Length: 489
Ligand SMILES: *Cc1c(COP(=O)(O)O)cnc(C)c1O
Image (cartoon, rainbow, N blue to C red; front, side, top):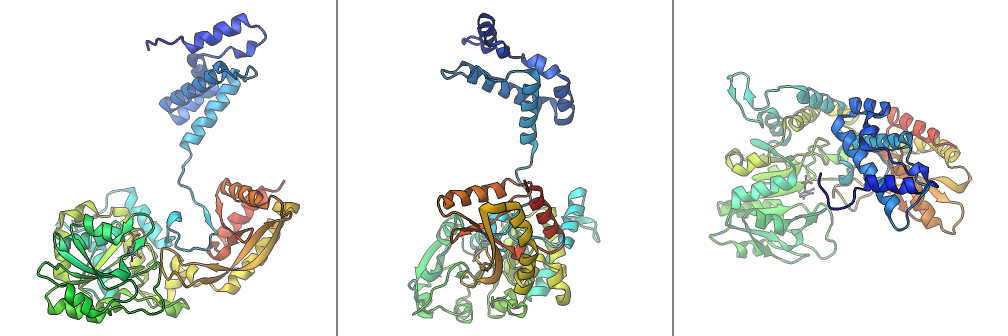
């Protein structure tokens, strides 16, 4: 490549030739490097282009270090050393950045950690679908193009009592699609108490605008009455909507309009009533000893025409947005071109179909669906595990840290039931000296994050807490113990 700058390769050579104090600065050429046996093997394993790029980058950086004002003449430039450096760079480039971690944060449905862990049945179905051709949009009976939703629609209807259902990428997409289908260029009255933001960029007012709807705010933050909605109705109203305020609650002097009343008002005016339910419980959570959460079928029974909810929250499936309700409205949604842009792939469809089928047997549901199993795990079981694994952790950490077993307040996560905490048990790792303990804790947390399977906890009350609710007995526990044992000095 023509260049106006002096070739750093030649410069380095000239420098080393006239300065015999630093013979090690004879940098091997790119060609020579790539011909070295180690790098020949690496190219066969990892691909020629990748090795070439990393070798070039390594040499460029080395030359920069040697030519700068604070040039370090003790820089190692041997062929062996450089080959090892390049091998490490190639390894880092190929290492997956998306990796399994131990979620010991205490939050079960952790959005940043991928929410619901899937059932084995769902995982198997995903692998089968991923491996080759599947009839994702092909009707085998009729021998022609089918509807993608066919694989889950029946089961969604069975489990919710809906007439019809459809699936998109996530619940944010479901709300966008619903609003755009029912109320494009029309008005949608929503209670001021429900103009929520859910983690990141999902804000009801923004979604409304993107969906082409005009938001009409009604009522006040703490109190909204049926008459507020009645007064907001115009000939331009497209639908009525309720948003489940899943990640906060308004307490005190409050009033909200019931589903029954909103549905009644909507229907008197020939308008559809939609509910963004969020978590989307399909069964009674109270039966599992969890706080009560409105189910999809209850919401439909109260008069909602369409309900939207997530696949990877309380349902315990893959990321998806589900819409269940009236057949004529679902048909309209399926015709919206936006549906095509928001659809799910065959792998998600497979996982969702397998997850929904687990609900056929309520007796085995808890055992088979990790989300429900983890959420309803008895505290005594978590306590017993803490007692089993604390000694191993003490051995690993040595004298610098004190390890205690402590009650912990976990969370369901993903905005579900935000004020309810899950009674749990944690291992608290506390530096023995209080001086500089903040930095020591951060270093400790960082060290756990660099493990082959990173361990994520939570720093509170001057200790690193590992809430053990999501560390399952058996394989998970064994893997954790093996990793801790490996750390021992
Ligand atoms: C979680 C949630 C959403 C967003 O759902 P995603 O599946 O994360 O896109 C929307 N509305 C409510 C009420 C929610 O709880």
